[in-house]
Length: 195
Image (cartoon, rainbow, N blue to C red; front, top):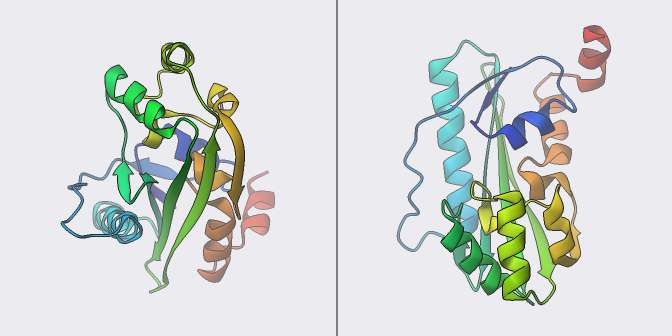
């Protein structure tokens, strides 16, 4: 099994349900296409990562994912800098941000499945000092929307609404579990066999 991702967050999540897998960082162009919806974009990018993973490995099953944060139809990607992270959090302050996380499972036996899981995160009103302190404390520069809900970022929120809380961290494990079982990879049996 291969995780087509460089994300340490996704590796940590996958290790909760799969005991043995490899990973690689697929090189793809992640630029959003003109007039492409956020949902379409995250699906396209995850499919592209899965395609690269199958081509560059001998894995029987490849898992790929992508995520974006959306405000008013605009995608907020990974900030990459402290200034952008602060600006993203200031924009999210007191508002609902929708996080869209795609997951794709592609298997050499011909199985292919894709899904997008949404998570609505309501941010409480944040002061400039809180934003600066949070960015300095957790450095969320590699996270869509500039926060880590699995860490200190949870204190920035008023509430969450989602069918799968792991989607917000970067890999929707409920959808992924269904897909892996459908692809012929029985998770519980495989986990017990590894122990």
